Length: 292
Image (cartoon, rainbow, N blue to C red; front, side, top):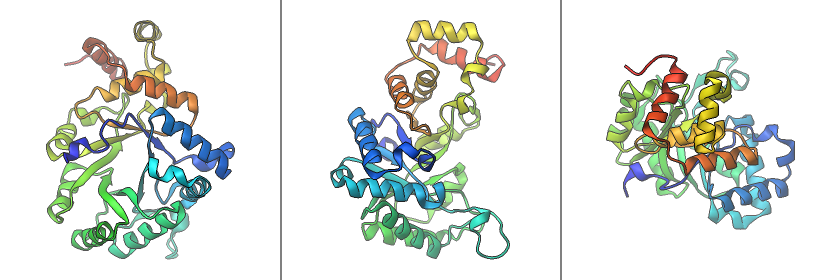
């Protein structure tokens, strides 16, 4: 397997961070129906983390899978650990902090599996680089989890190249992905060597906040946006996804919206290819400066 091909042709990932904010999806049968609709559309990967809704998002998803067990074999789950919000700090200091200690990660894997009601997650990520990280101990616990069949792949989130390379140096397991920010409104990683580091090291880029935080309609000049719509037939959502997917390595957008119409627009964009001059015109417009 080429790890740069991790997730293959998956067009986008459904980000479940806001699941608990959708009352219409909080009943197991309703969420199961929503998951099945996404699967039928070709979206088979769902992104979680133990801090999303303080674990509630994983629990809701697990309840849906328990209500419709046949869905389990049709989907892939990504989840993460490593961030402790201030309100969950039991030390008395009430400080947001990172935890990548082996015992914390081992417990987090088991807790996520229990909430999700699955025996294995496809990919487990360390959510943020921890400056107190002890790489040997962390990777030993991840290797044990892979050997036990609890997780299939390991990856990282929000890591810089030298941070993920330090991990890779300490394990025989491949790191398959890095989940970090990339969009039309966050393009610095395309020009500082971060993109090339992903490609050289074979990490698939899972791009969070791919819709530029919903800023496209206000950030792009109206005449340009209208001309692009007329030429491509894409709305702002589809346009943002088409622009992103054209980057070498085909970064996979992690879409935060759970609205069916937004996801369908993103899927349409994932199948489109923009003319190269238009790709750069959008870049120039968002950066408010000409290409050098």
